[in-house]
Image (cartoon, rainbow, N blue to C red; front, side, top):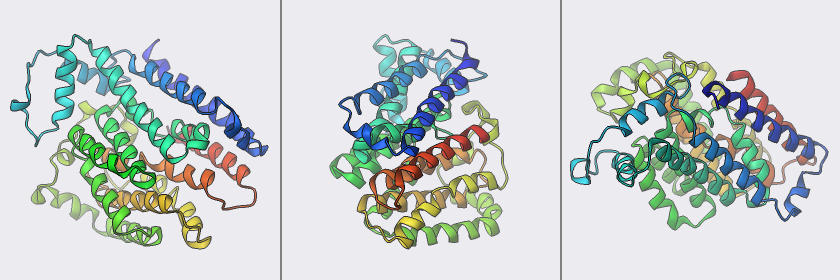
Length: 361
């Protein structure tokens, strides 16, 4: 398939799935999906089939810039071993490339493994968080504005983020034992996962109330508006993760998401789940330990991005929280009883979420 057709075909699949489910829920027949014997198998196979299709994409520097760059690196015979990389580097990604190369896999084979890891981690997170509502959970994921982009561009960051989403799902719904090895894997792929790890620990074990996390988010927004330039200028002095200072155009092919300056569009996008979190946790006082943790982690991680909003290519930092956004929106809608006509709310929210993605991408 031509590279230019991948995005339209992907969106056609996501739109078909989202509109169909939205119609079912608006007609208050969405719960019937839970009773279908194939209710988990069919959406899981469809989701992984999309991963298989994306994993075998062509190498295009125009449409898949990250893929093209990593393909060139993959074809270099670097003959690396762990002694030449070490723990301080993102060793797992480099060694995964080397192991696949030594196993005789082509670059296409390597990217297929990465894509299936990206989709597989997301699928497992959805199963952990919303096992009885898997079709609509995956529809929210596919309709998310940046899910496709980080599956074909920013692939290392995307894989690390989705593994962290799975780690967060384990922290929220168990078993918690698996969360910490997953965190180590995510960090070894991309050191920016340290921000997710830190906020996950704080959100799960320290700042457990979403109301407090929203207050932190609002304070971070005020500081960001007033002092974001000073924070960006001070970053080199504090010697933060060098990745924050060295993003360059070779790693990304999403110009609309890469501009510098104060990104009010990103801020508005980040605010999407906040009214829902406030409605559930503060106004309705619905208590759910898993959602409290999920909402708190999202707010804290996004608050950290607000402080770094003027860093070049800050979308890579923003995705550390945005990768959780479809789960933060979908979870309370399908698992918590909030409104009388909740099925209709699910359908309209999914349709609105898809519409927003179509408008901004």
